[in-house]
Length: 245
Image (cartoon, rainbow, N blue to C red; front, top):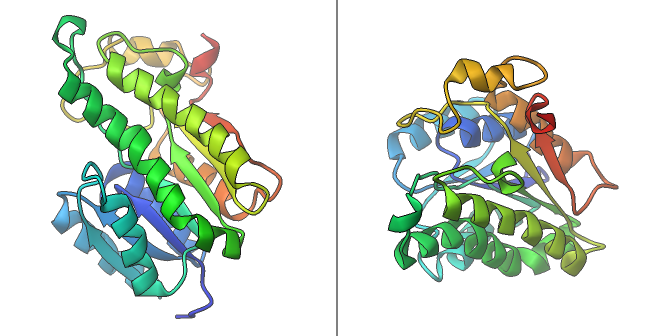
């Protein structure tokens, strides 16, 4: 272990794409502040895996919808590692809602996790990230640009996250780079059938005719965080060519 290793805070990191992002960053030599909300067993298992790679890992549990929690999360990361070099905001809510049933609570949950939390994380971390000439990567969605029927608050709040990415790139440059990654199909939703038809139909309307996997997103995130020194304000689409249909 080295105290000179970069420390990256990854939100929603216990499972699925977030966990793979944490694995790739740990494999690249980064220490990980691993945030989760409910998935404690998964988070502990992942932390054990990353520590076996010789990395320092701090588990941080909490609800990003709580008003002061984003700032608290940054403080906890700094207390654990003494530094913060980057943030990956992967935490997300993916829930359908019929147009006639959308209420204020649903809007606030989607805006809270996809817009308010990443803004206040960036604000709280800005001084340290400027010192480290660090970077921020948000996980957006292809549905930010092509809204998904039945997921209006989700699609609109992800579009707001793309706009926030670009605005923060202006506000925080030149010391801090801010980018986002927009996945296509890399994992099917666990509890819902695809809203756009069958899986076969969706994949047929993708240039590569196949689903991706979490490692595709993790590699893009690692590049933007650690290698892309002249890239900022960009929303990198990783969708196998689905957006061209």
